[in-house]
Image 1 (cartoon, rainbow, N blue to C red):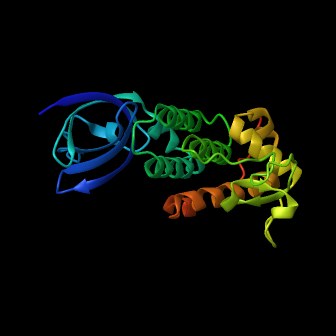
Image 2 (tube, rainbow, N blue to C red):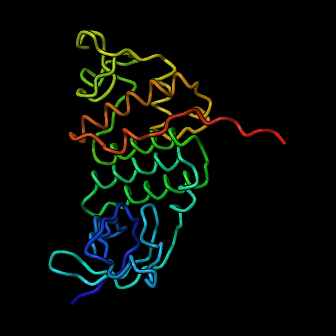
Length: 248
């Protein structure tokens, strides 16, 4: 049977039989990969913890009729182990992995690199996990072709700023086309949303908690609308404010 190699991020796993596991991954070149890791649940397995969610591996598989079979997996990035030590980061990573699973089937190097960057940032605790998640969600949807607008009107193109946000219309809209009762965003929230989309972390890190909360609600609504089915992991997300480290 033909074999292939790829670099891949483990998105999720589930048990198969007594000792095997089906592993769903996002490959850098092949896109979505579903493969069997035989004997991985035995203590003697040579794969060990390499095939856990959020781990990045150099993978060798041979192609099967319905599922591929993993022959070799070498660790490249052990982000899962670091992320698991922080509950807020862990829950954010679960949402990120589920989103990547739902958004990407075909090969997409931009989506792959975005996913790697988000997991690396969570593992290093570069920013508040909620901000990393929200930035990832906006960028992932943009790569998928659903880029929201936070400046000009998404319907008429009228120059902003506008405060009415309608997920179904693609972002902020002018007052004359805004449906009755539509949520209104503060100027600070609109600024934060734009910063998260463009990666302006100095602006995002400086945002007040109330502003972050409003932005997160907007992003969640936008994601849920475009994915059509809700993200299960979003309900378990820990968005508690990250307290500053105590001084020595």
